Amino acid sequence: MTGPAPFADRIRESGRALIGTWLKLPSLEAVEILGDAGFDFVVIDQEHAPLDLQTAYAAIVVAQASGMNALVRVPDRSGSHLQRLLDSGADGILVPHIAGAAGTAEAVAAMTFPPDGDRGMGLTSRAGRWGRRSRADYVGRGAGVFRAVQLEDLDSLDEAEAIVATPGLSGVFVGMGDLQLSTGLPADDPELRGRVDRVLEAARRADVPVGTAVQSPADFRAAVARGYSYVMVGNDTGMLANESSRLVRESLGIEA
Image 1 (cartoon, helix red, strand yellow):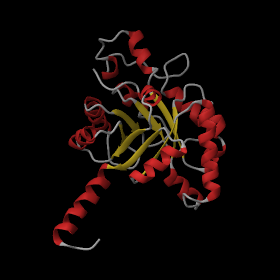
Image 2: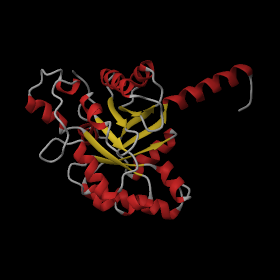
Image 3: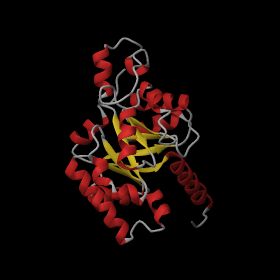
């Protein structure tokens, strides 16, 4: 099994922020198209899209064959999906709606082999190359999994320093959509921006990469300038919706 370098290594070594997008369609063609477009990574969205385990598995394989890191946002923080996704060879996991530092430690432990965590051994899985990898290689590659949690409410922002200090945590993701929903504040509100800036600073001091999601190239550049290391721009459904609408409007001469 070949594929891109570990996601955290690419963040450190690329010399630029990594650009990714969300996968919401159960389409392997969409994954391949995104890879051909030049995205560094794709996040397979099991929280807000109807993507089951088998679909995620196939998308992981195709994404990696297309040169992208394959991350998966799991449906919730229960951890029930983590083992099978990791054994499918996912490069990383995003855990949504994390419950502070304690919840972060619990999530990280579920993605980490003993003695530092409680991930189980699945040597005969794809991650173990169907049993052809040595145990040491399998466990070593497991250490390279990108283990990230999403900060999506004020409590998680307030606990940011403790969260980024969690042993074994690879990164955090600032979910601006849910932050705006939970606080009732717009993204450009000074108080909310200040809290997010404190997260970015705490993560910088702890050498923990921070990611987010945006909708436009201009927003991508602004996020990078602000200190984000990996940024998702749009998603596959939005790209299809926007381009198909544009084609119809321009073909028929309809004003936007």
